[in-house]
Image 1 (cartoon, rainbow, N blue to C red):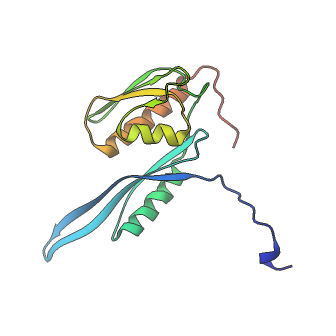
Image 2: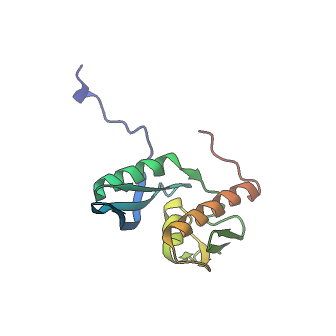
Length: 163
């Protein structure tokens, strides 16, 4: 039996990918300037799993590929209870400060910037968030992930899925 006669099975869950930040960074060396690209990618399956990756590459495709691979390595489980977050949390990471709050059913995600993207890809249906500190997308991404990790620790009656 040849390989192409076998049915296709997907062993890994389908993840959706969003590009949060793509920027050209410059390093000045003796011969002039060296240009590279930095990409920040969010990966999520809308079922409670989300991850992020930040990487640099000589071209956009290389940077995106590296960031996606890193995002797959940093996947976390988000505690979602009745489509929302289990409780309110305030977090500070460097200059970024965030507030994440649960919302009643039907409210949707009321958040700005990268927090909205992360919560949507995680599968949170109703939540409210506010970015209070800096507008740096990468620091806000890291702060959001710290907050989601803290939520997992303090979520009542939440048990992570066996892997």
